Length: 131
Image (cartoon, rainbow, N blue to C red):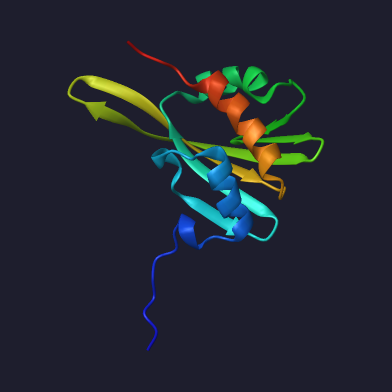
């Protein structure tokens, strides 16, 4: 009998391995699914849907994207990305309530550099600091 193991980032196809090395992915991005020619990245963001949609033109670098109820699609050159978002229960810490969105990025490209450039811009635009 062969022991079954859980699938993790180390078991993905070689292009995903190269991508994770290229991007220096942080622990927040451990849920990765893989299909041939596809790369999916799942994140949780502390924002409302309204804030998220307000950031999209700047985060995507263009205002020419397609938006449906809970999905954004963008085609730019070699890059095709579908961003799905879902409102989750707010995170409550004592009396503080932090809104949450579950965000999944579905990339249909095999070029790690293309994905890296996209995510660098998206992260730079959407990350908020505190102090």
